Image (cartoon, rainbow, N blue to C red; front, side, top):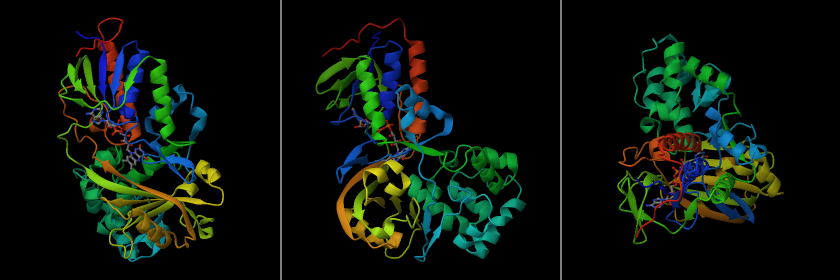
Length: 424
Ligand SMILES: Cc1cc2nc3c(=O)[nH]c(=O)nc-3n(C[C@H](O)[C@H](O)[C@H](O)COP(=O)(O)OP(=O)(O)OC[C@H]3O[C@@H](n4cnc5c(N)ncnc54)[C@H](O)[C@@H]3O)c2cc1C
């Protein structure tokens, strides 16, 4: 029985697993096919400042990521986003602040003036029927969209939930499983009897501002810290090392057959493709953005005229550290569905429309295409697996799951380990 662990994939899932196993005394090798570690947590340099190229925050739920950062000596660097609200760019082209007391756009109080303002009196009246319906209505819904439609009506789905889900999860509420969207929502609906009350309960235990956090200096610093700690613990880290012919006991890497206990931390080649999105990041001069006229950003309703972005983040208004590093300038990030070759030009035009501010000069800009897979997209593999396939999308899920798998594998470990076996 080989005692070395071979981790296929050097994203956050693979690195967290490798570090935890190394702490338990197991020899570990991480094979990463690209030339850098981190996967969907990556840095990009725009206008001379290192910014996050993909993931920029983590959910605070469970406290797992914060605990990991504390172990890595980064507790002081955890930073919550500034609490100005986001805005909604509606299908008719007008903009309103996103109602304050919601979860994924679902209002905790459908009669609140900001909800009525955002979706109109008729849709808000329909949403109030939720309070009169028996708890079982919608309780068996498979998607978030179906659940909200059955309880609160189409106006809430199209006017609030769809733009938020498009912006936050890069998906449609009708294809987003309820548990992926909000693990507690269904249980709280059973417990409280209405969707609005369920939302209020969730908000009460996770008040606004404490739901997500980032790292001062960039989320990518987590990857740097994990790599450094893995090196300190003697983990062998290989880049340019694509693993093929993966079984639970061996992999082929650049023509070498290597044996060991294989853990997959990378998407199998035959997994569902997921959706491609393009992110454009602009650093601009625009004095109209100084007062952050759209708070931390704008979520765009489908069909809004003259705009093809689905969300805009005013990065330098959301994260204090970004604002400090770009004095007199603003960082904006716009996201698009699919591959968008002219993303920077489109983003410059969309930024003006969505913020209502004139963009005086684009100082620097970059764009990148990413693949987003639904959580659980490749949960079924013969070998043990970590990462967003089995764990679900998002760093909180990926880190907590990798820690659990590492705990299990360390407990199963035959003897105090002494060096992996490499053949080939
Ligand atoms: C644009 C964008 C924004 C996001 N924003 C957030 C956010 O704000 N908050 C949040 O919590 N989550 C966010 N996410 C999701 C989050 O980043 C991911 O869920 C998480 O990073 C996935 O980690 P992972 O280790 O499972 O996979 P990955 O990061 O995909 O890592 C897998 C690694 O395996 C490597 N690999 C693949 N095949 C092989 C092979 N055969 N051999 C060797 N190596 C291989 C890949 O090169 C990659 O480095 C975002 C994702 C994207 C794309």
